[in-house]
Length: 208
Ligand SMILES: [Zn+2]
Image (tube, rainbow, N blue to C red):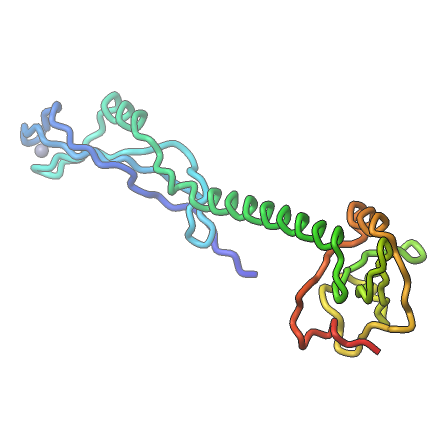
C-alpha cells in the first residue's frame, strides 16, 4: 500500500502583544504566532513533534523581531490542541471498539452453545498430524443433554469463515456431544465461531 506520511508545521496560537516598543517605528503593536510541528499519516495528525517555535512581527511596519524571553514565555504557556493527536485518538478508539465487539461476540457464542438450536453452525479449529485444520459442525437435533451434529464434507487447511460452494453437511456423519463438552471446546477456542439465523441462501443450508 502506498503510504503518505511526513510532518507539517501548524500555527496553534496567535497573540497580540503591546508591551514592547518597535525599534523601527516605535509602535506598541506586535503579533506573536506560535507554531508546532506534527507527524501526519495520510494527512491525519498523529502526534506533535519537536519544540514549539514562534515569530514576532510589528503590526504597524511588519518589522520582524526576536525577543527570546517574551517568545519563550508565550511558547511555554501555549497548550497543544488535542487534534494534533487525532490519529492516535482514532486508533485508540478503533482498538476499544474491536475489543468491545469481540467481547460481545464471545458472550453471544456462549449463549448459543449453552442453549443450542437445530441449525446452529460451529466453526471448529482442530488439529491433524500436527497441523491446524478447520471444519464445521451443524446442530441436527438435541436430545436432553446430547447435541447431535453433522460434520461438513471438506476439511480446510486454512482459516475460512464460510463454506466453499461445493461443500455441504453430511447427514450420515452424525455425532453427539454433551453440552458440557461443547462449552469446554468453546473455552479452549476449538469452537471459534457460532453462527445462528444465517441467510436462507447460505451454503450452511446444504445438507446431503
Ligand atoms: Zn514597527
